[in-house]
Image (cartoon, rainbow, N blue to C red; front, side, top):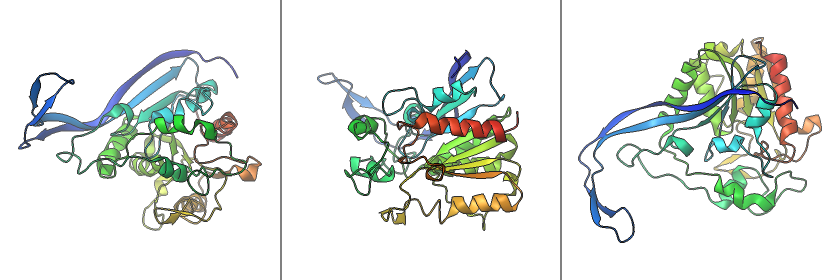
Length: 323
């Protein structure tokens, strides 16, 4: 893999708005243990609903628009930065493949900050337990039990858990608004790479800003977009890639649905794939086991063959996305 020649790197915040809080009672607190008591006034003007975007630009990218990496629920942009065994993650691997890269933290994740609750957000966040993350990331048939042949490094599960952040369930409207503004701002074009819950927000934003979208990769997306209720004709000229790992036939449920049947094999994403083909669009369904690649969980960007998968996606982009 060739060396990377970076010409610029930076970050910005997008979305959000100034919100005024009035009528909340003052809070007595101390800024440090043993410090003098102070009165904190929760009223005033605040910024809420912004999201963080970090960008890296190459001297000679293979296409002029960036791959915009969108994380899933309870995660941040850190998902793309390092692998389970400490190697550089997909952010750097895509740079090595010649792509400009954006990595974002969605609203109330990572470097995007929280909003006050209940004044702005309706309630507190949901914290991710070891058992919940194990099941959501499809690490085994039940918490603490790994899949045989899995490529996930279970000895590093503590480190994996340190990466995850509280997950808000009452701020989807703010999250979507920020993604909408982010996608609208990408006038030079963008390639969307969305993981899990990120697919939900990304497809909604892409529907509103299709003219800016040069390609969409849904990485085990949890979008519930219904092609029988939503007009997806604006996607006709956008190449799509749907990527899925292993262990998808297991009979257990998360939050009332069989993972990932509601979104993949039996549901929305498979239906979207077929609708795109019916419209004459360019859509690829990439099942890693069908390619002879076994053992990947929902954390496939962090596992020991993560570079192999990243390179497959990069090769698809070079073939399907026009410069």
